[in-house]
Every structure is written in structure tokens, then in C-alpha cells.
Image (cartoon, rainbow, N blue to C red; front, side):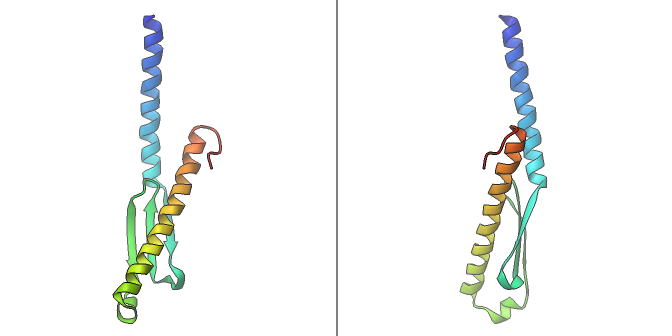
Length: 100
């Protein structure tokens, strides 16, 4: 019975190591989305963290605050959508199959 417990704990430790490595791998993988017109660029990693947002300074003079906010929301949401697809792909690789 102690051998069974040893195997169980060994398996749990391996899963924790795999999960930790997966998290590191997901942090390193990013997606980039550029809005129509190229005024907003958003980079999101596969841990669903915004890495960067860049604005074309010209839009601050040519667009209203509401237009800029809408552009930001749309671009960020698209980046998160692409990031989720990346997560599914990477987790699928870990488990040796296609999850999406």
C-alpha cells in the first residue's frame, strides 16, 4: 500500500511540475492585435495578461474619447479571444490532443 501512495504522490508532483511549466510557457507566448486603421496595438499573453497597449498619438487629436474607448475595448477583446485560442492549443499539446 505504501508503494501505491508513493506512486500517487510522485504522480501529483509531476502534475504540479507540468502545471508550473505550462504557466511559464503561457506567460512567454503572446498574441498581437492591431485595430482597423492601425491606431491601437494590443499585446496579450496566454495567461490573459495585457502585456502592452500602444496608441497612435494622432488619434488623441482626431477622435473623441468615446471613439478611442470603443477602439480600445474592441481591440483588447479581440486580443483576449485570440489568447484563449492559444491557450486551448497549448494545453492540447500538453495532453497530446486537439481541445479546440
